[in-house]
Amino acid sequence: MSEEYLIQGDTFLSTKHFQEALDCYNQAISSNPDYFEAYLQKGKALQGLGQDQKALEISNKAIELKPDSAEAYYFKAVSYQSLLRDQKGVECLDKAISLNPNYIEAYYLRGSFYRVLAKDDQAIKDFEKIIELEPDYSDAIYSKGIVLQYKEKYMESAECLDQYISLKPNDPLGYAHKGIALHKYGKIEEALECF
Image (cartoon, rainbow, N blue to C red):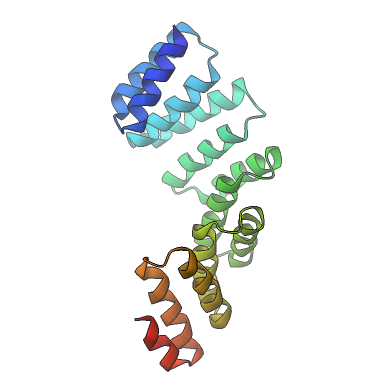
């Protein structure tokens, strides 16, 4: 019975009916108080409802039930992000990555946290790790290009953004940021071609 509630909740969650999903996950937990997946999904529904503090508490319960779950630490970090507690989010992602060294989403979120914390070198390392694991991961390529601009490494940024454009040729942001990087590097004519 609890699995049926989980499946119903997942269906509601996928269509952004967060309250209905939450109700289903609560039913699943009532049927099975140690149902790890239901707690994990309940945290996602709470995040969708903007109840980030409650989502954080549910993430803690999920971790208590399954302390070796990289996903539970990842979603705890997402709660911290919503609560603007970036350093705590980094600590959760460190744990998630130690449990799953190929967890691309955890590297991406940690890189985003590092950017907010003005730790650009660490952000770049995380984005590079993603690119190593999945060479065509366009969001990591784009983010690396943007962080390189913050570091005033304009030609490297333009090269990164050129790679991004080859993957996402219809995204005007790639062209705009490449143009900005080239302009700041002094390549005005090339920059104009991007706009």
